[in-house]
Amino acid sequence: MIRSMGTFTRSRILRAMSAGLAFVVFIDLAIRAGHAQTRSPSGATPVRGLGNLDDALLEWPLAPGDARYGAINGKHLREYVAEQATISRQYRDQGHPKFWGRIVGTSSDAQDAEWLATKFRKIGLSDVRIQPLDLIPQWMPQSWNVALTSDGKTRDMESAQPDYGANGTPPEGLDLQAVYVGLGSEADFAGKDVRGKAVFTFNMLGLKPEGAVKRADSKGAAAIFEVDMLPGNMRYQAYPSGTKAPAFTVGSDDGYAARDLIAAAGPDHPAHVKVRLDVRRVPNLKTALVWGTLPGATDETIYVVAHRDGWFEAAGDNGGGVASMLGLAEYYARMPRSERRRTLVFIGLDGHHNTGEGSGVGRKWLVDHRQDLFGKTALMINCEHPATLQTYVNPRYQEDRGMVWTNAILAQQWYAGGPSRPQLQAITGKAFREFGAPLYLDPNSRPPAGDLGQFWRFLPGVASSEFYHYFHTDQETTEVVPWTGLQATTRAYAKIIDEVNKLPLSALQRAPESEPQR
Figure (cartoon, rainbow, N blue to C red):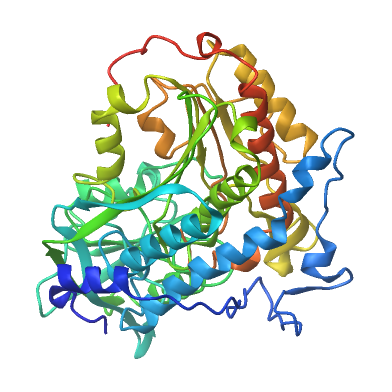
């Protein structure tokens, strides 16, 4: 049972922000990747045949002339990822066992803001401050239960996770007949009456989107369950479904069990789902922007931003991004001011996982003040999901292995100023290549989904991200953020900054393409 957020007050946030934080950097969650795995004494997950994962990862050697970037150490940066994951688990253990993480407006958000400000001060940044921001009432699920019964057998859907913003049920819950609709295409719904029933549909990353959840809602479903077919029983926190009926994601093990129970039930005694979801909109909460500055030789600026929020441990999204931002701050803080051509401004953004109206209030504030902040800005780097372990699902001829880990890092989507800034695009592609950070061959025409999307129309920007198997799941732990990826991407960001500092503002700035979207 999740403790009521109604007792969460502004004073508690302020107390959490002012409290001294003592962290023990440790990794305490094992990944289930198709088979049970044991831990080595060092805490890293062993890899059969290759030994310890950390030692098995492929590290790219520094090119001649790039020795200075060796000061950016990926194993050190991953300690920052682990510390942020600790903040998330502390929030979970304080009475939030299902909806947890570094969630905007909660005590974990406040604790994380204070943690980041402390890191900025320790690094030696100036003008370090936490800028409070008001929030509209926030969606906070208090508790939920889902259980399917068929022929005297009951399966508790432990992995069921309500989509963000989902509508709740009546206090007594719902008791609904269960219907299976496969992948949820129009053909799958043919001949099936789902009005007033609980619909189970399947989906998996890489499949053609069928719009199954919306289709079920339009056909009158009373509750909707979308099964993620990734191996295991991950909890996956989805963005809003926009449905009237309460919608949930469900892990693979629970989903296949539900499918089989529905199939085994006779027409006279169909399977039933009991579902209850208690949701509140909690008012009077706050979040914050966290600022730090490294003055340069001129008043021209480069901004480095990373959103602080995330679901569950949020190690990749976005513990890795915040760690990369800190790595850049450390790297440039070691330089004399005279060697920093432009002033570097670092901002821990509030976040965007509280999707919908009232989300991204920090970005909105920055956009509203763009004339004051960005008049002489040469570059904004958005550090977001910079490193994830490469994985495969049921590889051919080894389908029984489930989720398979490798000793490599995933390629990232990327954006570097768009077609109107060919120099920035060339600098970015070259930097990632030199440090062994793989990219999609073609850049995005606009930034990957994330925070740079609010700024790219009027600022020269660089962003790289991945959104793969562990994205938004309770299995997105520190282990799946490889130190080699953090190291390679952060070094690439530093090289981009150095090369951009050789260019005049006129080579980078453009007239706004149109009024920026918020």
